[in-house]
Image 1 (tube, rainbow, N blue to C red):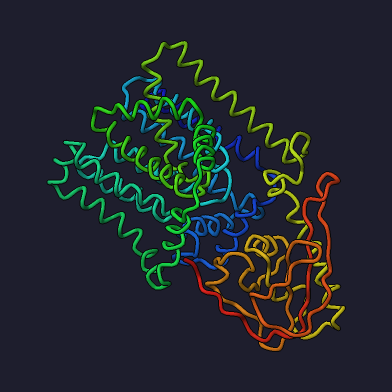
Image 2 (image 1 turned 45 degrees about the horizontal axis):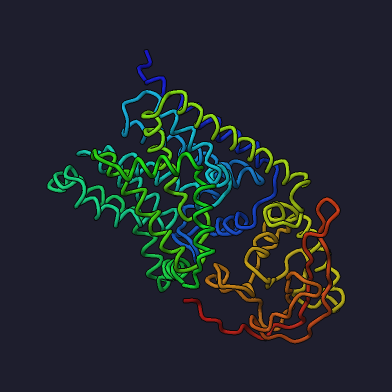
Length: 487
């Protein structure tokens, strides 16, 4: 006999349905620009990378062993998105004895617009959201040996994205706020949990130490680099409201601000403090909408518990409205990406999912013409050229869709390509691929002789030009130009 509460069976069903619908919404679409970048990482599994910890590359490598194509890149991230929904429901059960709280929390997490996107794409957000949601749930119920499981979840979150480290100051806050935690600290178990988290994250720390702490320095610079404005701050507030959903954000934050019990205070610290840090960062400089998304399952859990204090009809209406709006918006967006009608095809929200394969095909054809115009010197092989590009995104898309594998640093900001530091053999030919007509000369990247004429091309979506590109062949590589890594 299955003694699992019906509400938790419903949570599993919601999580599975959310993963399935996300797979259908994004199925068949080309890789989003950053997805191909992380796929490129997965071709060289490591303990760390320039921009993020290694989990995103590990998951892509693992799933691509079993499933080819774009689905193989995204498969385990869809699973992570479903897990985040499940852990939101489990956390709600720690916050409320009401049988509907877990289901309502799961529905709010499943319908959070930003979790819908990040729970479907091969980005660092899906694994950090799943692991951080697991850590939030396990922290809420951590007593005795359970601290080891909480530490394991935190360690996995740290391996996914550095923002999970914000749980450390949250725990320091809890020491003063949560009497039960202070009592637990007199036992070895919380310290064991901390040791487990550190042991899991230690290889990534060792990689950073061996690479001048480049990834951690980059993220600190990225998060607190300055140049903020009131407009940017308000835009981030709007992104939080739209990304988490108004019901989850308003009810969840209100419920956590009134935390009284030990589980409520633990979830509140793990959720509200990272949100406060990202809001502070938004006051200092530009931020991205997904920075606070790891806390959205915790907000959904608190909102699910808070809904139980409302009139049943109102609570059901709020949840039903959130789900209906989310499904409608996600369905409309998925339809627009495939056949733009309301959104221009060149708009970034459409263009970043379209035209990557066409760009790669046109680049290969342009490379053949560019090499031929120079007499096809040694190294100028359109099937396997050495390539410098304008951005790391362009390099990654060419790697996935054109099958090219040899890339030097990109002309724009430094990236993992700089750490790999590859260059063509001296005196051999190579290519530069960039946008524009013709592409801008990459004087900052290398020294060369025998520059050919750019061969340009266009990529269209639904009859509209969404990007232009060009390939320039160089007859002889003379050496790279030194470029220090920021900050």
